[in-house]
Length: 255
Image 1 (cartoon, rainbow, N blue to C red):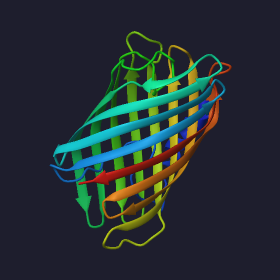
Image 2: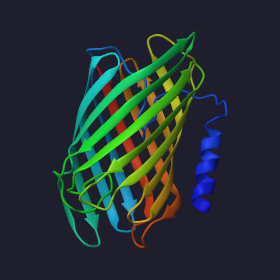
Image 3: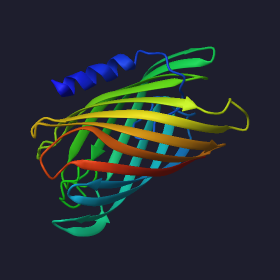
Image 4: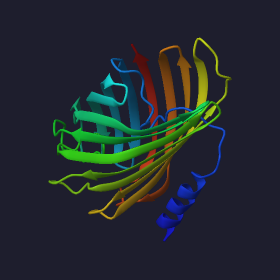
């Protein structure tokens, strides 16, 4: 019952009007730039668990063929040091696709919804590092909805990750809030705080995690810098597999 109480509390809190804005750090966003634009980015995760440490460094290239569609490739490097093994190399390559199918704009605010798929290719080592390197194919299918104004923003994501030859089938729900610390200005200069929750149910393993990430982002014209700390609020997984905390450091550049 504890896990369902946490989910109910989070879903209800998403209905509260908060003074926040901006794209999330540990989740996705429905806001897209103009067609024909490119974004190069990385979001390094340093994950500390009861097993040991995992350092995950993806190089990502995102392209928008149109203003309502996006395709991307993520090529990641991983270094790990656990009580069972250590090593480094290529992790699981990921292919991302997004399509915005609903958009409603008004003065100073917008609401958008996108369909999202993330195809994970089995290019990494089979070290059973969830979302990092499993050496198994997986297909994620979800919907991202976001409401953003000049004063605040809220993003939600719900989806299912299917792994036909593994035991990591997952129901996932993410919720993010952003709080701008500076007034809107031109050229663009923003300093934003982020408050993000991730619910993860691994169905075949009967695992559940509720994670909270506190982040900050500096945006200058067409480049941004991200930093976040993620900690578990609920860590109902097998003994020895608990998450201690993760650090996220990222940059992105749009051209």
